[in-house]
Image (cartoon, rainbow, N blue to C red; front, top):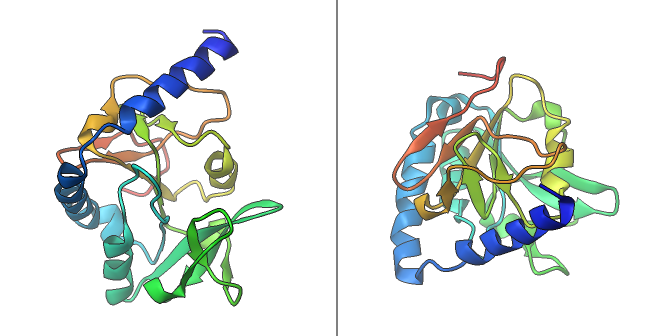
Length: 195
């Protein structure tokens, strides 16, 4: 597939991902979070990376609170001029609205390196069963995930309507180890990941 055709295909897929009704989204998000926190990989993790949901992404703040309640650390992304970084969050009140309209750790944030993170809960508009992800098109997560430990687990989370058989992918796209939806969990583990 040509680069132009692949870009057009990704744009069409993003539009499809935005069509879920709000009332369906809230109950589906609750079910997806329940699936996430029950995963053994998630339960064992000492440090988990989350994200602040925007648009049609599954909100994961309840899972982050569950992580902190069991004594583990939760970290959230911050976009900087140099790229994405992760910072420690002690509670939802530690997140401030950035200039881009995304909740992220404030200026007093404590950075956490990718090598300290056991599980990455990764946003996406759509995922496929091979672990490929359709993000927002900036490549920020793919570049950051390249820095992770080989035994760290990447978990994509989405609504089941946003799980498809196959997505177009670029050579730099980082595949997920698991995909969690409100109905199923798909294991697409790569060799060496925590089990």
